Image (tube, rainbow, N blue to C red; front, side):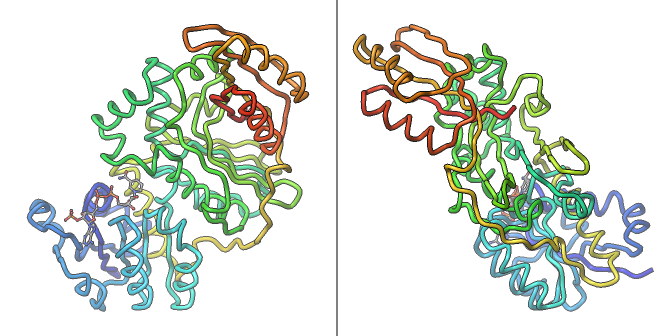
Length: 418
Ligand SMILES: NC(=O)c1ccc[n+]([C@@H]2O[C@H](COP(=O)([O-])OP(=O)(O)OC[C@H]3O[C@@H](n4cnc5c(N)ncnc54)[C@H](OP(=O)(O)O)[C@@H]3O)[C@@H](O)[C@H]2O)c1
């Protein structure tokens, strides 16, 4: 029986999960891969932290010990961050070693360049674990949807923000209280910036867009918005209207153009996306042949994420030749803000009697086509809650500008995804 030696860069949450699965499920892995996958060396910063793992794998602190080891053919990158992960992966691919990674920041920022490098060196770069942790969504898109035409991918792809929004909706917590609780339970990092600003979800939408449509986009190319400004008031209003607010990433193909966005979005309480709670993730695919399909599961965590990495290792180990993870390439233009229309939820606030009158006038003047309009008075002032007929983001922004000009604040302008 052939043995393939595996190197690990990082032995934290994900790396230790990979070691655990490779060790515990050895018999099944050997059968499915057609060879033995042997954990050989793990790169860490502080070996003293990993005394228990030292019984299963050789710990090293010098990257060269893995890069220059001719007997290691596959390497898992589970360190995170752009540097030195990018330089390490570059060196490994140049040394003709295939790499499996969970690093969405790096793949979303430098994916095309690294994929090219892998191809030029006759090796593979796989990254199933980089989107939605334990949900095997990238392989599903690349293989199971290979012959279908996808029209939309909509995902809840960040567990931290989904946990916070779930607590806001179900426990009536504020954003700050829910974030603190998420940190205490380990669902949010000490520095949650990338999660709460929507950047992490945007990284994942870059990758999903490539797999669904073949188009390379960067996070600078589209609008992404986080959940820091989501108010408990709007969570309640949305519930009264029959919706739940979720941080949704959308990638849509329309008239030969691609539209990508990450933003707080209202989804109907009866929809599948609304049932995705706490740290869970989900991806809903709409395609011409299959119709609507839905993929749900843990978006992070040691073993779920490690399982995705191990499936990449097995795919690579069992392939006769290094294979491309995603062959789809179709560079479509991005749709402009005037071209995509959706219904919107708008939450307006007028502080004084004068602005209250201006508010009513504004809705008429701007010819806003509403499907629901509700006035609510409280200590903050006079709120007007609207849902609209489908309108473009450009029209929404024009309305917000006109409102601000007459001193009406637009507290929320969220898309409704029916
Ligand atoms: N955690 C999840 O649930 C999850 C889910 C999906 C994707 N990911 C992605 O998976 C990757 C790893 O995340 P993680 O949560 O496992 O991180 P982590 O727990 O912080 O572990 C990082 C590991 O990498 C090692 N490391 C970091 N920088 C290093 C360097 N310069 N040289 C040598 N070793 C270094 C650390 O060594 P020491 O232990 O010695 O400090 C540690 O073992 C990230 O890209 C993350 O975005 C994570």
